[in-house]
Image (cartoon, rainbow, N blue to C red; front, side):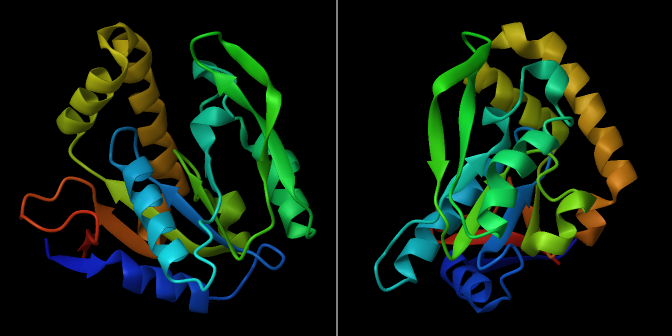
Length: 207
């Protein structure tokens, strides 16, 4: 496998030069299995996009985990994302969604605004699914070895999530196989590179 280190700054320029397909907004989907490093990648790309714009405005980042109605809503949340976020932004209007609390196990009452901006990043499992393709400027798939991904999730959320997490991994594997997400992605990122590098500035692309 060939891997190449590339700068987030260069990827930000690529996104900004790309076509806007969600109305006037360039939609970037950061997909991949749980624990692969999607959230970190999305945050660093958002920082690079802010640095690449004259007013240094950071693009909104929507995490699909915030839209799930619990563990059983792993893939069926999409209508909620479309109706509350993607459709309004496509029409030139701000979107808004209510964030799900995994502690309280319910959606919180305060809406989270999603402004119309030059770029919108949606991060999470199935973010680059087939249903999103027509609206995407860039589809990213972040991957990492399964044992490491499991360890990362347990370190973050505790061992009590293991039964649900193992079921989650089975479902996401089946989804990615049926959807062909990785093969269709514009960019496949190694979420656990072993070579030393300046991680805040560079990501590792699989060739």
